[in-house]
Amino acid sequence: MIGKTNDTITALASAAGAGAVAIIRVSGPDAFAIVSSIFMAKSHKDINKQASHTIHLGHIKDGHKVLDEVLVSLFKNPKSYTGEDVIEINCHGSAYIQQEILQLLLRKGCRMADAGEFTLRAFLNGKMDLSQAEAVADLIASDSEAAHKIAIQQMRGGFSNEIKHLRDQLLNFASLLELELDFAEEDVEFADRTQFVSLLSKIELILKRLIDSFAIGNVIKNGIPVSIVGAPNVGKSTLLNALLNEERAIVSDIAGTTRDTVEDEISIGGLRFRFIDTAGIRETKDVVEGIGIQKTFEKINQAQVVIYLMDGTQLVIDQLDDFKNEIAQIKNKHPQKPLLIIGNKADKIDPEAKKKILTEIPNLLFISAKQKTGVEQLTDKLLSFVNDGSLRNDETIVTNSRHYDSLIKSLEEIQTVQAGMQSNLSGDLLAIDLREALFHLGNITGEVTNDELLGNIFANFCIGK
Image (cartoon, rainbow, N blue to C red):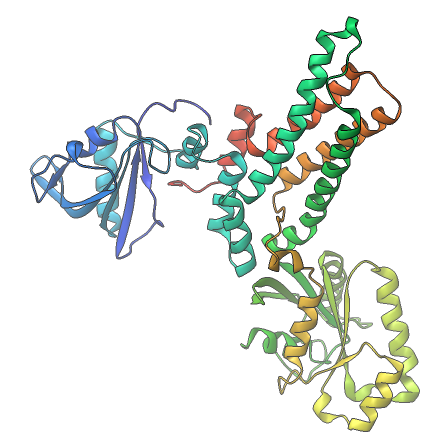
């Protein structure tokens, strides 16, 4: 993907398809010359001579043919998104008009931009580092408050600054160690070993915190899958409908109505949850229902939170052992998964019976999915499973698996250096591991990179960004 970057590119920057308006972006050394050859301002001013960050009304013309009345926004280098000369043409949103203007720009000397090429040029021209560029894609893809907040924080350089600060401190000590190698015969030490040990411990703690944050970052970015499981006819589909506030799943008094998994998403407290209504777990000779039950077990394996729903009217005191055994089996099979135990149809249960049941199953939450009572407490419980304290406190949260991998490798090298310090290894051997740690940290921000890496990253962007 990484080819010529000194030509002029163009692409539709707004969503494809018809709309009220559309934006066509042009970036490169000939942006002003190309656009001025097809744009006639109503003021008759030459846009080549106009100030940056100004907007001009006029017509796009193909020879004598007027294609559209447009607004042209000017951004002169280096004060533009890409760091190059950039012009954005705001035209009417007809698909025909969009294509006519794009084809005209191509005939005049532009090239169609590759996926993410505008942001790639911004990175290559020093307008943002690599982790900030990746955050642009995350911002576009964000579909919850939490995902949006993290992407904004990273795009503004919060994560980058933290990594750069760590790298600068390491680089300083690495330079002193390298300097010692030039004076090996004199047996001198320029790097204070006590300070170095302290710095390594500090960096180790920070790297561990960033690595640990990936667990919450990953679920915030990709959503939190929640399986709703239980016996047939306990109200799983009714609960899904109550959570989504719409009739998404079929509800029936006939056991085994849900024969496949039904999924949908909602945002709770700024976090995206993906609820999965599964087929009821029971012995069955029905082949189709049996396949649905098999999928239920698969979805439990895929889920990060499990809601085990029971019919509260069947929770008779002298029969609770069976339910407690079922709960124990799920916990034993999935010990790492948060489990919410829910007693449905609470509106049909005597208050005294509820108290007695809670003494036997204290973590049970009573709700009525049909009446939508207790559903808010359920969503509060779901939020409590997600450690979003770091999100509220504006701490740096890692959401990118590439960053996570580089942090893991950096930590391994730092720990190797620590072990070397304890073993009194020579400075030249310590310097080798330090260079590796610096490499992996630089790989995050793009201070160390290659064309293959950039190609993989920007290929996932949309055209026009």
